[in-house]
Length: 124
Image (cartoon, rainbow, N blue to C red; front, top):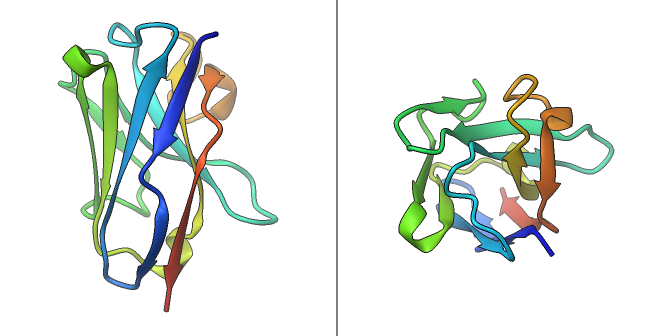
């Protein structure tokens, strides 16, 4: 079964940091653009960051620019989301997904394989 598997979520105070990991299970994602999304309670799923297969191009939502960094290690079939200067509004379930190679990179509908998500909670 092809599925990204997220890890690294948790509870952190405002201003703290977390690093999320997304490992591929059952398939290699090294040739695909990968993305991170998040969904807070009663809100729609929103784009956070994306990275091309080579890692040379990255994309960020305006709300996380300068605080979050996406990276990948294709040898490990894993990508990462380093989150610094966390704020309470960053609280959400974070999902990793594979871009289906069509559609806008910041649209959830353009991604075909999704992980189960990892909870990030930032306390004030």
